[in-house]
Length: 339
Image 1: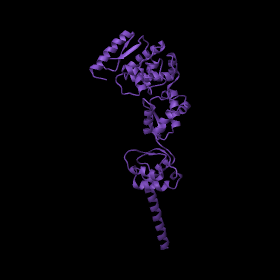
Image 2: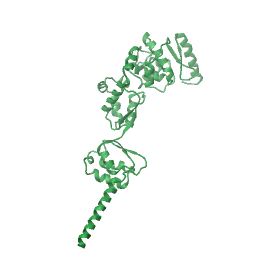
Image 3: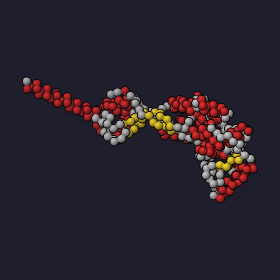
Image 4: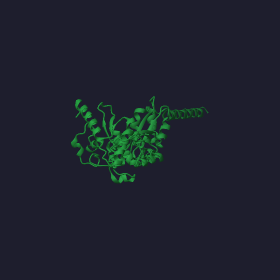
């Protein structure tokens, strides 16, 4: 009888020990951090590299418990990619379940007003699991752009610069689908009607807005500039926009445009060509596009940066008046030694 009680007691102690160990390794908090940390699992990760990435944010017993569970699941053969939140207070078992089921956290992705698709690709490559080189190659590939209704000259018009909630491991196709959806949401019936009233398509609005964005950072003046360029377009006059020369030359740092630059042979050079260039010279800002859609109606045909370097412009109806404005600005550049 005493032996039976002894064995029963021993068994009970073993059970309690197993329960205690199970609780310790699997049900206590996995993270030893005070704030939520994020772990990024990509296509190249194995179970060992996943454990290595988790090590800086996990307790030793939590990491042991995680490895013990995960090695006996399909996750060990194919870790789920994504951005995972390691939340303080959450148990090892909860963390395993989240990562095994692919329950990742979204990121806030800001599409910038990039001057080139290469720069956009660089931003996306730093923010997402996507490779920037592959993105850049896709955005200059005609068949790829055609899939979304654009060409390599107009693809910049697809992107509406804003902040979007996406998953870190989003594929390029899924990202493009999302951009098409956001573009269509932006170009609602009211905006399309305004574009049509101005004699422009949405792509042309984005193209003109991209020029205006490069002309000035003064939001209040953008509708005035839009009105001036629309006047020139409707009269068949070349836009003669300096930012298009910079784009054609791919010299965005230029502070002064010289006469010989105006003859550079490029479809983007609006001194040599009438009408709009083939596509945007950057991803146009929302405020730039709104300025085109809500342009100020006036008779001005010319503008020149003000000689006070305020970032605003002197507008003129006649060419002679414009020449006087241009002369004042040229003197100001010379006085400051700007070349």
